[in-house]
Image 1 (cartoon, one colour):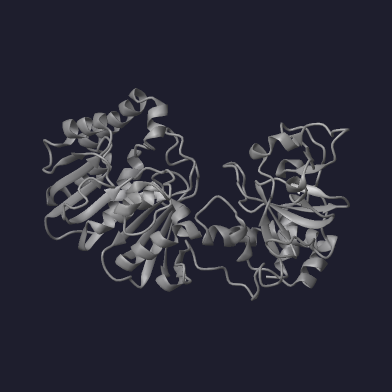
Image 2 (cartoon, rainbow, N blue to C red):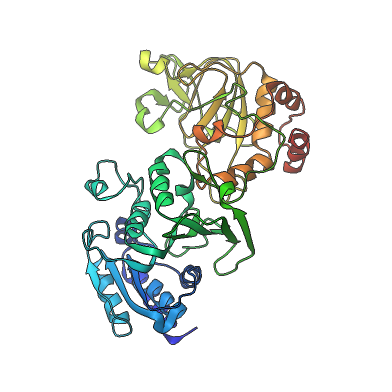
Length: 464
């Protein structure tokens, strides 16, 4: 490691320690670790001429240093845009004597919009923060953006020369989901998706700045889509374990241009959860908006029903009431509250949000009740009705079999290959491969409390 890079590391550490966490969070400021910066710069292709470069959101300059290490004297200049005046000053002090270029102080989504400058290489670790639909900066973008990071990438793509390359360190959430469809359509109409590098650990990459998103490094180039996309993966920073190449048509799929990290698993199943007649819906009760209806103890004077959270399944089976800091009863004080209730019968709950230490993203629980219940919003639930008309599953065995199927390693790996999000929402569940209802009912007869993952995979394997 060169002295310049070691100095960049020291500068990054000092900037993190000197900047209050509240300010870094307000600016969505996640300064790039050195191993990640080196890997990001290494994803660029070789060059045979002088390069004009852009570090979009320069921070302390560690990505610019990585670019200089990668290309040496071929770097003609590096421009940067930085919102934080303190970091912009640090960038100039550290780098401007070594490389030409200009530092623009301001919002990268607005600054230099009409400048017309085009670059050969653009590198960025953009802010990760939701972007409101009514954010005035949306009007400066070529497509609607759900998050600042996708907005930064679009701004970068607009500033690429033909044949130029952009490497970005971003969450995986852009790869699927309706919110990012406009972004995917824009960037894939302008560029080729060349490479993806996936990190296996959710919190490893930015462990010292409290970033818990699933993170990837992606390379786009300003040209038509190449035939093959390279996908690499490492469990920790700096250690590449697996490198594969896939046909682009196997990774970029459907009219919404969902991007997979591996081709869809081979299976004999031709049906999905939706096509076999199952309907996933989101739990109806948003607890923080319904505090007046929720009580810890069963009220004597008010009609009420059990309120079910995923926390009510500590060993995979319903336990209610249960003390874990959440109110357990939902009061039916008016017509609105009554409409939040599900009829007695069989359902399957699926967690919408996974914790970083959980080994599976898709986690399902059978729910078989002989009285009405209310279901909290942090879970989705499967039934046989329609989005606006809930009908219980036709049997308890179907609920047990469906929960086994959704808890299989096959489904978890399928979802990881398709989705870049740690959330499992109703729209994702609809697309999951699924056996027939008869096969699921037969599977349900093998269900028991606390089944080992190996056993689950064995009983589900005959249906794949």
